Image 1 (cartoon, rainbow, N blue to C red):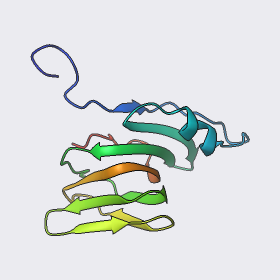
Image 2: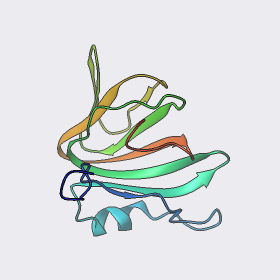
Image 3: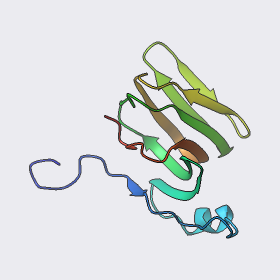
Image 4: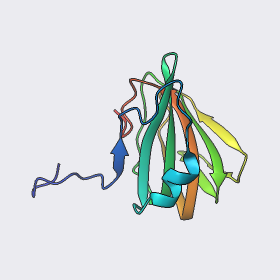
Length: 127
């Protein structure tokens, strides 16, 4: 939080499970309804992991996850994963795993739609 009491991370992050295990996951409907520049919605849980939808434009802050790997898979647009020593450019149908403990940030200069797979207990803003 900053001095005005608002979040320092202006991201629309929804950690609730949007779909149950036997429910159809409708990604196009969620993407069409999205008005946020940085939107993250947990879609469903698979064993001890979750699948999340991201609709993103702009930059996320630098962070790391001490105990959790994080997988990104691009559906639409171009998405970047910046590491301390290089940047990974992901196009549609490409994915990349950031290992636990690695400092990174994500960004998209134009709107991108991605899926993320990560431990259900992960803190999206990092630790």
